[in-house]
Image 1 (tube, rainbow, N blue to C red):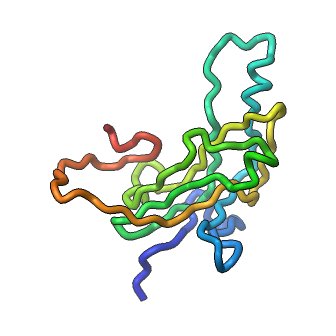
Image 2 (image 1 turned 90 degrees about the vertical axis):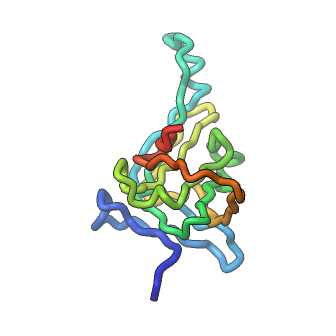
Length: 164
């Protein structure tokens, strides 16, 4: 049987009890992605209210999932926040969504590991536990134009790695 779409663990997390993403119900569009490690997501508001804050930009955090995704060339995995995260935990995906392209799989920079970019706009730092659901991935199709030029760069990693 040819596999066309699915998730695998990256080698860094082989042998660990990391769940592969799965849908919670038959009607769920998204596959639940979980944190591969325990980590603390710093509060942006808490940092702004510290006496030693000097106006430096406070960045978002990257939560490793320990998994990668494979799919056909004309698909991508849309990363979306869990609907409960903003209301219950003040946790948001800063750009609204994430896009995992099909050529991100097994790239030389990080083997295609999916990281979820988040920002904590709550008043306190937020503790994320290994195995906790943090986002959802939805497989989507896309189309290209008839006049597309074939001058493509080669992917070497994520977050701006296409070089353009």
